[in-house]
Image 1 (cartoon, one colour):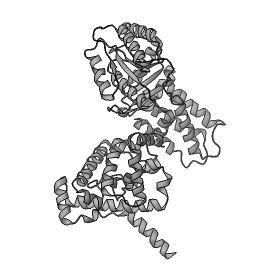
Image 2 (image 1 turned 90 degrees about the horizontal axis):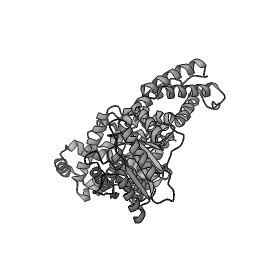
Image 3 (image 1 turned 135 degrees about the horizontal axis):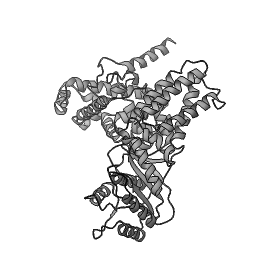
Length: 502
């Protein structure tokens, strides 16, 4: 998300480097580019205009950080203004002691209300220890209530049903009574939508709100519809009073105009964003983290939270111990691959890392597909080894490699390449351990991600990945790396020779 805007903003700010002093001409040129970037990202015109003027006032006024160079001053100003534009701070759902707390989910048909209802309820159960109950009052769309039942089953959240009535108010009364009697502290109401806004829909939503007195009314919108989503949110807010926005399909929205405009236009914050089709692919919306991603600063906090939520603490610490003792085997590496897959694609992980670590590199869709393909081939090679071979790669003689290549559908050269990369990884892990890096980055982060996968730094990588310091080497055989490129070990050997000369 925000790829288009991010590229243009980073390019504009990069052009300011090397300027000894900020002049009005420099500011004007940069602001013209920033304004165009925002408009091309489908940001509301007035919002873009106000954003640029606010930057101008700070860049030319006394609020500039005098201790930084001009480039850093402007980056800091743009960063702060982006945060303010999107609401300043993250807005959590606010719950009371009332049983149940009601959350109404509203929006146009096809925006993703039902799926978002399931995703948010699952997230709250896992992260805020809520006990949610779901109910659908969409009595018009065929199988709408059945769809919520299926979603509820998939996310492990109960769904209240009453097949004897098609009256929305009767359904919500029954659901509220059931929740109160059985101890569900949160009731999600998945309301009906229309292909367009009409008075009949709004009257029904007003009646449900008056009946249930919800603590939250969340408007769900498809982020890819841009300013159409913002205009719809504005109408819903005027009629029923929404308290927050959920933007779906943010992973497919390269522009991000809705996310950047909606808070300024309607005065209500984005609270969640959908970032994929899976039921755990939803994130709270953090303006500061989004601003960091847009400006290429990464989003390490979200990455750490992903690692903590999806990677076993015990397994991570066990692997960390093996790394520090240089006992990390191909069996452990196979487990690391499985853990890494839980975090999503390589492209997603790279976007959360600061550009200082990635060299500003972004994977294309084709490269991401190639990464996934090579990871599968690497897994296939390791899976074709016996447990004894995985725990001691030195057993792999010519006949064993031939068997492994045949069993994995690869070639002997690919098997050899994986072994070379694994040996390079172990050498680099030994160097990292000597430098104290394993202790400094946090056990869970290193054990679950950086230790095994980040350490798999053989030479080369996918075409165009040179700036990653060989990160492409972790992908395994066939990733486009040169088997003869032994860059990392050469660097290590150089240091040793230098010490001898001293």
